[in-house]
Image (tube, rainbow, N blue to C red; front, top):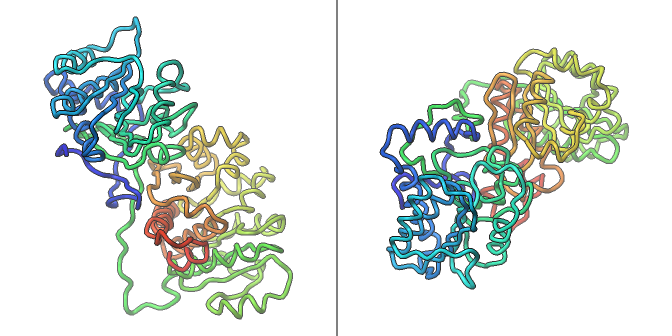
Length: 486
């Protein structure tokens, strides 16, 4: 393995809780230019090609035929370098390169000459058989759907059954956003060069990338990152001489008719998250004696009777239409406030209440929308939200002057005053009813214990996803399980 190659993300989530900087295209090009200016010509591409060849053999050590699918940019140049090494190491290398009148960039042309000098033959299409494939078709410049020979190559890769190792970014994935405007490679592993990209970790990125590796090629990141990869906090042990009042009060306002379970999940998560006391203000008018008899650690209180000026309030979990009666008071008076689910939908229907939300004290408020709820608040489509999740989360944070957790694959944590974070923990086990209520309850619990809204959101997202990453493969993860293990 190249000494600089580092395994960042595997099937069980992050390999270590490290806050990696995530660079968008503009910052990456600046970093590349600076690094290249300090090194002999062609050095970065040579390092990238060697690391790519080594990682490919790590995933397919017994492969005989290696298909190196190259494009006509510098991403293809990395593939040419890898092909040269693999040919010298005794592999049967099939290098494909679309024909074009457009000349290759100078570095890529030099690497192609090196590959041909090593005996690598050039082909225009895919091989009849391959054991492992290097995807070096498209890089960070992609903005539109792949087409022509590039599309043909992507489709041939997806039709095969061997592992694919992507160079820098899977072809078809937008590096800045994780959006896939058309066909996209589904890699077994992706080796990101120079720095990690935001799009590897959110939207379609996780599905496209497989395992994520980083090789900085010897370059140090000097640019301000577009985002950070979220990580866990180092929690301070609790003092022995403490009591329930030391860890804050959480009130869950929600649980309208037929949706009491959502409020119970949020309350249970708040308890397991460490809050000193948790109150349920259920909006269902029925007698809930049985509910509280089976959940004795949760206390019952009407929404109007809550001393919310001294509480962290989690509002909206299963709230339904009944949230409208409580929300104006919560916006003005709650010491800390987490708005989820029906609280967000109610807010979207009442724009006159938006100024009250934006006027709340900094660090006291968090919104936790899924993409549809975010779209309602932004007045756009869900597809537009998902096409640029970072920008959507930042727009919400600036509009409402609070912390925003845009949930989904690679949840975005945004704030008006912070560089956003992308959460690397979690998997499809969380795609079940109630897990969002658990996240909201945990977030409220951490805020009650003294975290600011942004720090609480970062910690809650990481812990919430980490439970799913560590869950036993043979059993289903349900929301009650998640709440108890949070």
